Each structure stands twice: as C-alpha cells, then as structure tokens.
Length: 242
Ligand SMILES: [Zn+2]
Image (tube, rainbow, N blue to C red; front, side, top):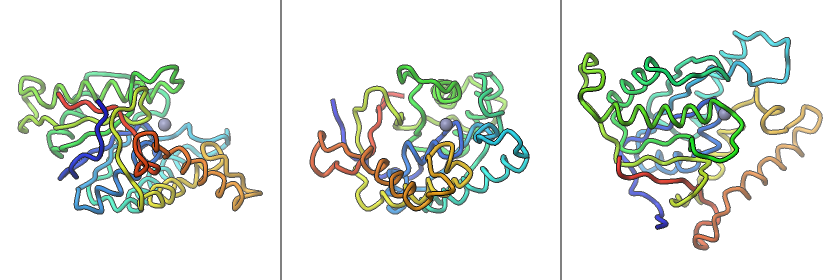
C-alpha cells in the first residue's frame, strides 16, 4: 500500500552516517515539518574524516569543518532540535553493543514520533556506513521501546510511531515537498567541503556545476507517478509497526 504525507510529527529524529546524508535523503521533508512546528533533531554517526579527495588534508580540521557545515545545514532546514554527533571514524563504523546503547539513550531522551534513517536493505549499496547505520537504528529502536534493555539508563522506554527509511529500495511512502526544495538544496550546499567529491562542483566552474547539481537533485525529487502533486517529493520505505 502506498501512503502519502504523514501528519506532521511533534518531534522527528533523522540519523545519517555522514554529514550531508540526511539532507540528501530527507532534507525537504524535514524542512516542511520544521516549518509546521515539528522539532527536528539530527544525529550524525561518523566524523566524516574520509570525505575528501585531498590526501594531505589535516584530519582534525576536516572533522571540525564537517561538523560546522552540518550545523549550518540544520539551520538552513530551520531545524530547532538537537544536532548530535556520535564521532565514529568515517568508513569504520561497526555495529556494537556500545553504539546501540548510545543510540537507545538518545531515542529515550529525545522521544521522537518519527525516526528517519538509511534503508539497510538497499540493494548493491557500496558504502558500509550507510548499511550499518540502518541496521544499528533498527536495533536501537527495539532496545529503546523495551524496558529490559539497558535498565541502568533510568530513562523511560520510548517507542516511535513511524520509521521512514530514505534512499529506499522499495518506496511506499511519499512526502510532498513543494516549496521546500530550495531549503534542501541550500542545506546540501552548506557542505562546502563536499562540493567537489560528492556534488561534482569544481573550483573552475562553480556556477555552471552548481546549476547542474541543483537541476539533477530537483529531477531526483520527481515522484509524479504517485500523483501530479508529487512532482517534488521525497520517497521512503515506511515501517509503522515498531
Ligand atoms: Zn554518506
């Protein structure tokens, strides 16, 4: 069954492997919800320290830059919740009891109605962090809702109402986002350190490449097969029985 446009949640938590993943996957949806009063929080699981083509870059500077870019991107989406960083090493995140525990605590504290993250079942996905973060979030949702997991946390259990998986293998839920596409594009462009490596915007042809990037991203939003009002929309796999 295909569903469209959730009721705007009170609180949403988007979890991405790297700075910029959330904006690619759900930026326009989050901007729309934030505009309608939702408290949008973000968690970035890795430090983004491999997100460059420059082998001589200072790693500490890159990590700090990517953090600050993420905070600017959250502001571009008008997100009013928390922007949190787990700080795992980029490309080396492992599903562990310790990470599950930290994610569980965050979910129990923030109490999101909707959680958004990577679809771990996306076929032929290359990047290990995207797969592993997807699985980790599923594991943390089970732990956050059941009181016998990590009782030492002394925080009430929390069960989100909905989980939306972005960059999904099978999309069955759509969020119309007309009017919020520019928030998404501008938030993506906050990730200045990623212009060349991720967005293919080169220093010699910034204007032309930026225009191409924007038009490519806009065309990726086209879900007009769902309905003409969904020509600018983001698609997800929706899990409601959590
Ligand atoms: Zn990523």
